[in-house]
Image 1 (cartoon, rainbow, N blue to C red):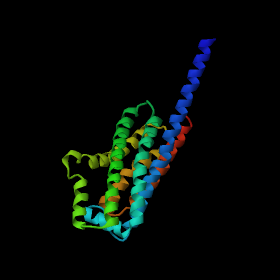
Image 2 (spheres, rainbow, N blue to C red):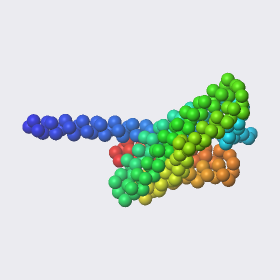
Image 3 (cartoon, rainbow, N blue to C red):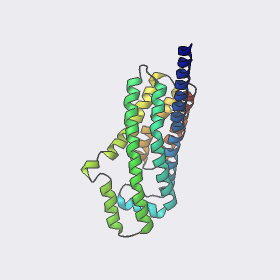
Image 4 (cartoon, one colour):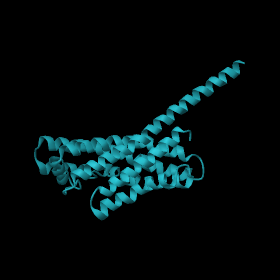
Length: 233
């Protein structure tokens, strides 16, 4: 009798812990992509009449021209990238241990690592915001920003790892979701659409609007993942 009671207590405790994990991961799935969408939308607004953050000088000019939009874009990107880590873990959990588990693990690991790096990149952006706010030797400030984005070989891997995770990792994760058949095809396609739309905007059209569309698809897709997780996957 005592053994049965102890077993029931352990089972109940394990179930509560599992529900808590599910809710935490689902919360990341619901909120992480929203942060990225807001960041991309604000950046699209800030650059609608031109402008870029490709160099330190251009970054400072963009911040001076649109201080509020760039400030909140940086905040949304930082929070979004942080919350994308549990979002990615939620997707891995939904994929499960079937035939796509290895692909999902590889893609998810790359994506999580990439978004951790992106969080660091956005924190470094706070320095540029302060430089633009208080003014000073613009050329020197621009050189500092440029050097911080890969000038030191010891940290040159940070931004490339973000690119790898944000593009390759997310695509592989979406492919694993598609192969696992644990979410609707359109949800998996929504995850997979993020990298090509990002590339389209960055390298082909030269504006942020495809990224905004891809961000919206990502919000819906990860919303489906979150719901699937809460329902017991």
